Length: 567
Image (tube, rainbow, N blue to C red; front, top):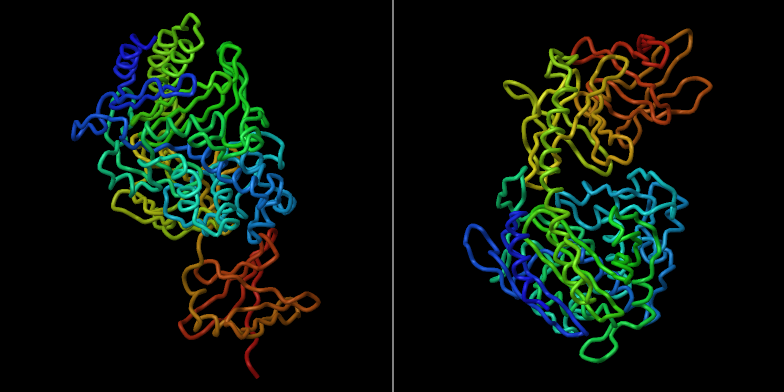
C-alpha cells in the first residue's frame, strides 16, 4: 500500500522546495509509517529523523483543549463557565462580552474579536501584558456571531488552565498529557527548540526562492508554541482517536466528543471531496470523500504542519515541514487517506502544482498593481522633523518616529528600520517576507486643526479600523516647573478661568458654571481637556519665567485669555 508514497513525498518536496519533512501514518490504531525525509537544516545538511523536533504551531491548540477537558472530567471546570469567574481581571472592549464569554467560546473562536496577532507578535510581551491589552482591542463582531480565529483566545484558555490547576501551562501539559502518553521529544519554547540536539530549522519563501530564516518565538504558548517530533505527534494523534493512553482511558469519551463535535462553521472548500469545515474545541471537524475527519493545521514563519485523524477507521496522518506554508501537507494527507480507505487516489499533486505557479504569477501582478496606485510626485505636508516623536496605543504599545538624513525611520517593539515615503503623508514599512515582520504596512500621519502631527494610523488588524497611535506627551507639559508657571487666573469675556495644581502636580481648569476639568499633557505647551474630545488649551510662554496667556482650541473657535495679574 505504501510502496509509492516515497515517490510522492519526494516529488512534492522538490516542487514546493521543502527542505525537510517528517511523516507518520496510523492505520487500524497502529503506527504503519514513521519516516523522515530531507534535511532539518540547509546549513548543516543533517537529515530529518523520526525524533527531529518541529514547531507544531497551531496543532498546539489540541493540547490546550484536551488539557481543559481533563479538568472538566475532574469537575473542576465546566466548558460553559464564564472566563471572568476564573480570571477576575479578564476584560474585553465590550463589557457585555466580558461577562458572558465562556471557556467554550475561547476554544471555538467565538469571541467577536478578529485575530489581532500583532499583540502576541513579535513576542516581547508577557502573558499578563497580553491579557491586559485585550480590553483595548476593537471587536468587529458580536459575541458568538461568527467564527474568527483567535490565538489570543487560546492564550487566555491556557491561563484558565493555570488558574484552576495551580500549575504553569507547561508543567500541567507535561505532567497530565505528555508523560502519560510517553512523549519524550518535545519542548515549550523557541529557545528549547534551539537547544535540542535533533531539531529542525525554519525556511521561508520570497517568491520562488527559499531562505533559511531565524527562529521566531510564539509567546502565546497555548495557541502554538509546542515543539514535538513526528514520533511523539503520532502518539498524540493516536490518543485523539479514543482518548486512551497505553490502554487506559486518560480523557473521557464525553470530553473527546466535545472536542470533535462541529460547533462553528468555518467555510466551504472549493473541492467537492472536502466540503464544509467546522471548528470544534481545538480541532477542525470536516469530511473527506464522505468520511468524518478531525484535524488541525499549523503555520508560522518557516514552518507548516498538519495532523488529521479518521476516528471511525482509527487512522491518522501527521505531516511536519520546516518550510513556510504550501500544499505538501494536504497532498500527502489526502493521498494517505485515499489508500487507507481503498479508494482510487485523487491526483492532488496534479491539481495543486499548477496553482503554485499561478500564485507566483499573481504575486508579481500584485506588486505591479501596488506600484501603479502610488501617487508619484507628491510630498509630505510638513517638514520631516514635525513627524518625529513617540506615539502610543494602549494595547499595541509605543511607536517611535526618528529623523534620518534622507527620510524617516520607525522603531516599534524591537523593530528598527527606515520607512519609504509612499505618497502625501503616507509612509510604508519594508517588505520582508522571509522573517516575522509587519511588511508593507502603511503609516498614515494625521494632524489636528492647529496643523500639528498628532497621530499615526496603521492597519495592524485588517478586520477593524486602522490602529491609531496618538502622539505621546512631550515637551514643557511634562516639566513640573512649567506647570507651576501655568497655575493662576485668566480672563475671557468677563469670566475668570482658574488654573490650579492639585496634590499630584496635575493641572485642573475651572470655568464659572462648569465642573473642574483635568488638563492632560499633550505636546509642547498644549494640554487636552479631559472628557471634552477635540478641546484643548495651550499656554503662551513669552519667556522662561513667565506664562502670560491661555489659548483655547475648540472645534469652532480659537480664543485667547490673558493672565490676570496678581494683586
